Length: 69
Image 1 (cartoon, rainbow, N blue to C red):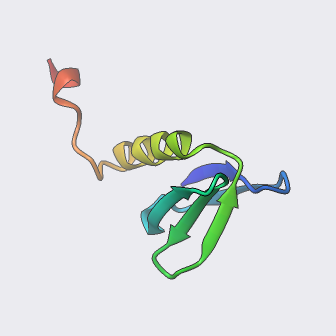
Image 2 (image 1 turned 90 degrees about the vertical axis):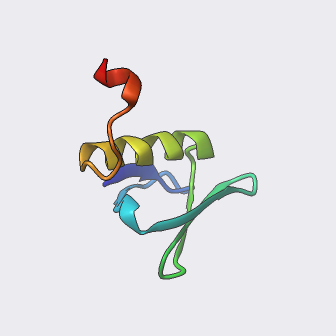
């Protein structure tokens, strides 16, 4: 789960597993696999970092080869 901020300032938590697409229009738009869209204040690059960290936390992504050395 990742914590994000809607454009109105309300914080919410999103299950990142259901993210299909992230775009900047310039607002960051997150589209879920069910077609639902969220517009958030965080820049696209920050959302990607949050999603990647979440995936690593649940071991959905392997560990970085550089980190294993």
